[in-house]
Image 1 (cartoon, rainbow, N blue to C red):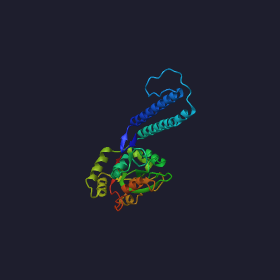
Image 2: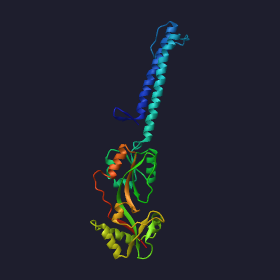
Image 3: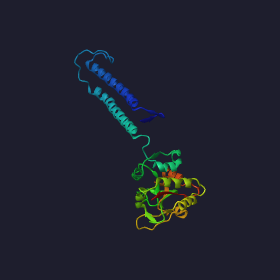
Image 4: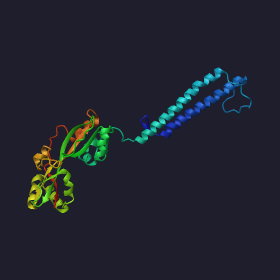
Length: 296
């Protein structure tokens, strides 16, 4: 689509206007040709549209032919301009309104930073891998993602980690006081397969019922049901980190979930993303609740 006088104009409308201009040029050329032919015969000049006698037309003098070149050149320029406008408009229509630099985010991250879409900056939602690729390629100026302390930070030329705010802590509680005491992040998938859905839901309900002190409510539920929270290591062989309000606050707990803004410094999108992830003047409050999956 193309913009004109503040309103969106259809490509066909633009090309239709150029078509009318081309027809006017064509009539002018025909009129000039008829006049030149009449002058060459020494006869009267007839108007465009009148029937002409089938008399042989003498060669048009050079001065008459020279008068046609400006019209022919103008006609060629007009055709080229019409094609350029049409192609540009079609490309704009295919490109779409959502293309171009802006902020890209995962749906979960966008939900956490609800003000992103209210700041007048383009916002697109997609999966984390696509968001990282768009930011690194320059298709976006900023990205807002959910990351854990165990995730590898996004790194690409010209992109900086602008802000991060802890939003949630997850973990694992073992049903029984024996067995392992620590799990590495890559091994947590095996625990997910052994999850006790009913007990996990009961623990979550107990924590939600005590919003003033969810951490204490979780510990009380664990003690009453014979559960033990596991420490977590970022990688096998790395030091284990015990879940606690302190390790949440200093972001050393590997399964701490953070809302992170990446971007190209100096762009409007980067500034908006950083302000929404870590608002100026807002007190940082680390999560005091551990959302634990109970496994057997």
